Length: 407
Image (tube, rainbow, N blue to C red):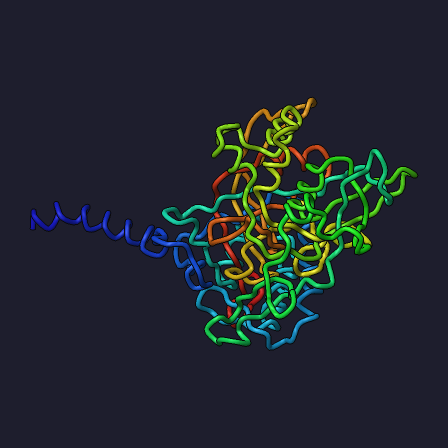
């Protein structure tokens, strides 16, 4: 009997350890499929608390439903190993809107989610259960519709010879895999790199220019953000957004600067990169050309659109790996955000959590352990997007087969 009593605490600890960690194993290799990127939550749910206004969440979900309504109701989305029809995703998000309309207190909201929704946790980065969060925003740049001594660096529309090939048409095991290139003679070749486009003027004379900017760094940063506003000399503004990529792998210019010893990892931010390039103009080309990826733009009628072609909502729109996470998914995140003083300096980082929607993707957002938050535009958005590099947690929600009203 004495032995049993002494052993009990050890067994209890073992049970707790299995419960805590058994459902969320540390990734030993990078997730390649949805079932590796998400795991169901059975016991240890997050505390569903939202630090933003309900109106912005309602707006984001409503725009999201518009995307879902454009699709075949029988289209399948993969939440981990679960196959979910588009009509069920839409019904679940409508049910969540109804839940919000009932204005539940935090305890009621948490109970309703546990009762009526399946919750999946992102498995995180290789060797970790955490997701690395970064940010992006909508920049504003001065621009000209014609080149001159001030505005020299073009933003290009998608070229007509840019071809995207669906590899699953050749081999069924390559479902979801695509390759981008161009045809030259009887060969299918990689598309022009940033070096070929900017240094060798591979696209010059094809009437693809949308506008011209003052600085090649601005062009590069506009492409990294995916969208932006261009302020013209007459005071008017045009919006540009993502159109296509040249298909070449994105290489971080920040990592390039660190590898070369020009900056240290701890100080990497968009602002630090821009400052270094301004102080070392002789390095600009080498740094920018280290990233062969090139993003083509298009004029859009309003602010930035995500990869599901709905307007992004500041603080509510998230970019995830489209191969692993279902587009348009309702999600919940916990991370940190900066506090900023009147001079624009970061005074600290505070924990926050909120509901978000998977409405975008990005060249650098790959794997189960990466997420990008859209912060909007303005000084705070630029600072938050430029400096955010914190680990947190990511959850995805989908309604259970039968949704009952909140109790």
